[in-house]
Image (tube, rainbow, N blue to C red; front, side, top):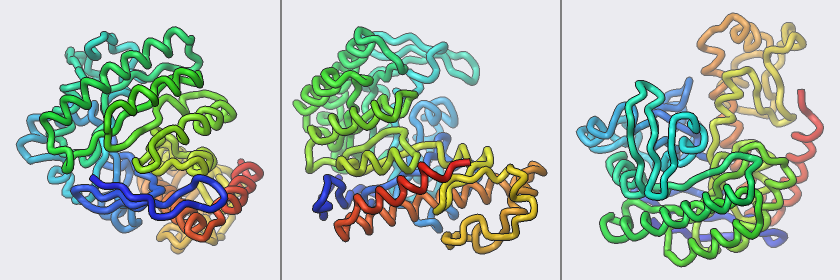
Length: 374
């Protein structure tokens, strides 16, 4: 994997980059749709390619549980299984350590957990997580890490940082000695909750190893927006300029803009697709709740400034109707539109950086998404 910064906005640290992976090129900043179980919910791979996404994310934990690594090994990886030949990034299962707290025990050498499907017991070590991602065939792999909930005590956050660093060191050595490092990249993950000194400590220790890229984990887990902004502003500038920076689990427009301002390159989140299935849609004029009765006789497009199939074809009244009738088509159309919006949103940011007007673009979207909420 190779990464090149090709342009920096003259007024802030927002930047354009090109990421070369085994399965293709990715232009950054980039938003990655989440195919948790090897599929984007309510959409087809054809839809994702039609919209123009260059990379997607899948989940190591869920792919390990089902369909299982034996099947993925048999078919020679997730790309073949999905018949998707563009880049795939996989998380390590570390977030499941956080989110499935009732089903796991964290040890210094890894995580013991019960399957959420059948209760069977499993163990993830730093090495095993990479072995699974090797079978998946991920273009970009993530190290095993420990994310703490918010709010966290300092002691708990410190302990999680210590484990994260220990696991990162093991992961780097294992990857560097036994993997094709050009074919499969490995990103480290910065933890430390909302404690500035722990974030700095974590970054400094991770930089002792030459990882392919660096991710920021443990944010957008319930902390106030002010703390998200503070930790982002602190952490990103001390990460290497010549390596891709990945803000994990962030998908709201304003949080993405805040991170890009400081030089973050990559984002993923289930939020745009999840809220679509719940009837909340992104538009160029803010969020709308398509379930609302105010759209019952609204025969205008969902977003007059959007050129996606949904906005060119259907009215708000129709989209509300099929949603209220629990039609599967409603989930498909809503999801398609929200992901199309995310792609166009990112492209508008890329264009603004190229033209040295990112801060103007930030202000424009901030006004839209601060003042136009349902």
